[in-house]
Image (cartoon, rainbow, N blue to C red):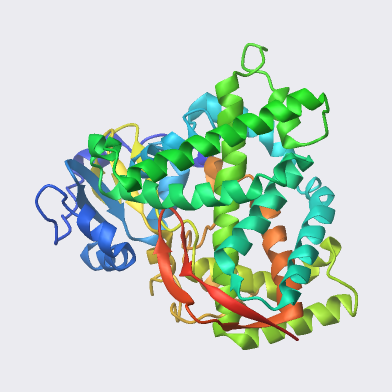
Amino acid sequence: MTVESVKPGAAAETVAQAGQPPVAGGGVPLLGHGWKLARDPLAFMAQLRDHGDVVRLRLGPKTVYAVTAPHLTGALALSPDYVIAGPLWESLESLLGKEGVATANGPLHRRQRRTIQPAFRLDAIPAYGPVMVEEAAALVERWRAGRVLDVTAESFRVAVRISARCLMRGSYMDDRAERICADLATLFSGMYRRMVVPLGPLYRIPVPSNREFNRALADLHLLVDEIVADRRASGQKPDDLLTALLEAKDENGEPIGEQEIHDQVIAILTPGSETVGSVLMSLLLVLTEHPQLGDKIRDEVNSVVGDRPVAFEDVRKLTYTANVVVETMRLHPAVWILTRRTVAETELGGYRIPAGADVIYSPYAIQRDHRSFPREAEFDPDRWRPERAKEAAKYAMSPFSVGNRKCPSDHFSMAELTLLTAAIAGAYRFEHAPGSDVRPRIGITLRPRGLKLRALPR
């Protein structure tokens, strides 16, 4: 099913007959439900299912419609009644801008997809294999020193390096990867607060948290300008995504503007690195808490590759390893909350949603819902075997989204995560080090708060 196959707009009589969704309890004056979303958002979003498939929330002065049923998330992704907008994207605009593929809508988004899609075609991804293999081997070798691993730093570092080296070829990223990782950690935490507690001008007051946020934001934008300037100064035009952006044309056949180039580079570096890094952190937590999974991955790797290192060509044969990755994304999704905005009055789940309304839903809550999966709390990679995958409710598990907003780098990211997991689990088992904090760190993305591990050679 594609977005083109959905009827454009709900029938007027259906909308007219629809009623108002119920209001969730627990709101407080001024902040509404934003206070609960800030304090314990995972539990809050999960309990909304008890109030209905669609419920109304208050975030400050705004009314937001929360969707809790798996089948309705497909309607959000596939119907042209909804566009990328709302509290999440508004909080991200200072980082991602308005002219990048992550935040654009309509004709601009379609043109941008056409520009970047060739870099992520299935037949293009094997060319990135040597970089992924090299970075995985370097990570495994670095861990042989036996030091306590700062999993946050290690995961972001390898995710940023793979993304940058594959999509923006050049050594200019080597001395900038650490700055990017530090900036992103600050920004994604601050952006979540700005989403759920929209205090507007108060975030411009020069208190330490706001100053740190603004410093990280300015530094990341400076880094992107440096990357683009370095490429232009080099005179080189490697076959990569940055070259495609610098040579892209707009609808009139003119070169795209500097702001669009800037925003597109941000969109390449930021969401992919943040989400892949967050999933890798959760994978390492899973391997630590379920050591039998690592044993099974090691056995699969040995049966596929023998004594040699894992190669990119092996990825498609590592089916159990890939299933561990998918099950990790189900129980520990990096993208745990999403928002959309209605472009016209519409009907959703039997309720009327007015034009211009913000709609919110949590993949985390839906993927842990008993309506979505049998034995929903159990970590079971085998649920993704072909004969069992149909047990999942429709649209309950779409880690890369669906329709025209489907992540263009889905195959790239799955290959990257599968290869990294195979290399890591084949070489090490893990135990917690003193000070390890496994509690979820809730920002725009979801990841362990402060995971510190010892890598024990197999």
